[in-house]
Amino acid sequence: MNAITRINRFLFRYICAVILVIGSTLIVNADQEKRIAVILHVNDAIGPAINDYIHRGLQSTVERNAAVVILQLDTPGGLDTSMRDIIRDIIASPVPVILYVSPSGARAASAGTYMMYAAHIAAMAPGTNLGAATPVQIGGFPDIGPSAPEKEKERDRKKDEAGVDEDSEETEVKEEPPPVTGDAMTKKMVNDAIAYIRSLAEMRGRNADWAEKAVREGASLSSEKALQQGVIDIIAKDIDELLVKADGWRVNVVGQDITLDTKDLELVYIEPDWRNEFLSVITNPNIAYILMLLGIYGLFFELYNPGFVLPGVVGAICLLMALYAMQVLPVNYAGLGLIILGIAFMVAEVFAPSFGALGIGGVISFVIGSIILFDTDGSNIQVAIPVIVTVTVISSAFFLVALRLVIAAQRKPVVSGKEEMLGSIGEVLEDFEHDGRIHVHGEIWQAQSWSPLKRGDKVKVTAIDGLILHVKPLTEEN
Image 1 (tube, rainbow, N blue to C red):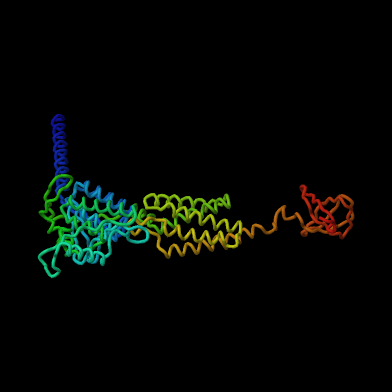
Image 2 (spheres, rainbow, N blue to C red; image 1 turned 90 degrees about the horizontal axis):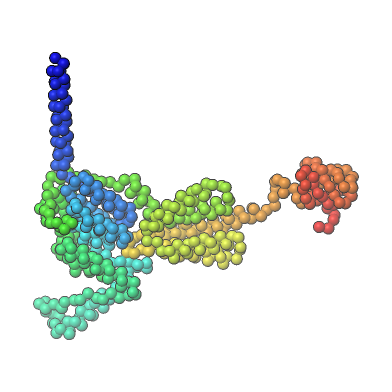
């Protein structure tokens, strides 16, 4: 009987184990068969925070076994370094990436145009635009070619040389792109950008000539014109229509041609987490600029008043966050040096007044340094002028007024403690030749004098030895 019971228990456990294994397998297969499209949403300038968000988002799509990634984009441009990192991630992604400029009214300007050319499928919503991909230096657009009137003159000259009738529409003169002009750095930036965007266009089979025009001339296109000229692949009013139109497209993903199957995909949105939000805040050029100044001021106060602790702690934290932000931002170290020099001049004005020369020079240096602190590099990464003006006014007032008052207060005579007794005037309470008592500051003290003193004489305290005051008659020459 016991043997039968043991056999029954064994069979029961075996059957339960088989059921658990089969159930787990079915659940795993169901999860694997679940087909999703991951949505990443970018609505800001391309920078380190956006780069981190897209990088981690593309990694998660592999883990989720997504069928496709839709990068919904609306950007005015951004940092060249961050843009290139994102493009490398898109090209290396084993999951097809559809870059979708949406909603209507959005744009993919500057860095966004390069990203459009790198995507496996480029799509736009009606009423959107892309282009203006010329690298921008501080001071505006570089001089990269002749102006419009000069182009017209050159076109007419070529027609005359070719013997083309102006009224004829059959013969066309092929225009060559104007050579890049300007200084060596401008030529280097523009030619590098042209080669880069043409390589992306050729890799994806899109209009490379217009891509070069977007860089060389800052040209832009609406969504309809972009589709006509082969710059994009699809126009869709929303994501559902985009998935319908993308179904059946053949794309090359990491060297392999695959056919997209985008029907009936479940949409999964990946939102920026706290890390992305924090990175986005501290890498904002205005925030990084303010953090840097708070760090400098905090450390300055701590060094000026050792042991106060709080300014040093706050200053160190702010300065470390600012240094991290500036590590990923295009910092112009000449601008940073001018800011530090300006602060040093304003501090020097407090300690060594120069009738305003150091103070005014410090303010000018501070302002110029703040303006050129970040290399724009074709992006919108720069400190806002209102922020610069506000911080400059506050800093100038702080160093030229507040610190002057502090130092003036420190130079006043001591009014408490042992040192306050030196130089005080007292009155002799009894006649004495060497040792006696005097009345000073409402107190009676033992006193010593090298001159005989009489009751009622006025004396001046010259030194303190423990609880004994050394005095001399007030009528004596000092």
